[in-house]
Image (cartoon, rainbow, N blue to C red; front, side, top):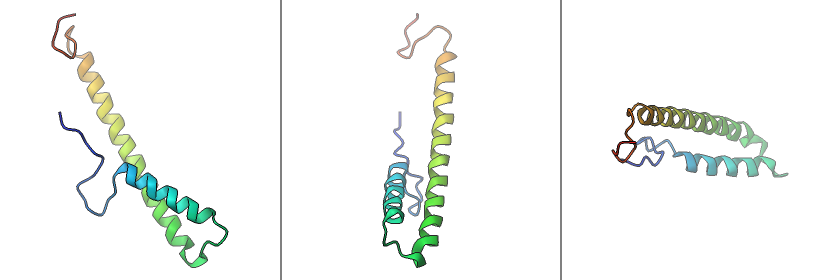
Length: 85
């Protein structure tokens, strides 16, 4: 079984954890009283991109989990170790 690290293979796209870290950083920046108004729109746009990426990752994970559960449910009385129940 392969473990997916959440990376897309696209060097320009962060993994889920990296995206959350960057979102947290943007949020702290936006909450500060000395936020640069000239950068505000840029940071909000980047946050929107990261939120979209995270939602996509969650959706993909949900589909994968549903597939695994469906496969487990479809084993006709055989548990995950291959033993009859």
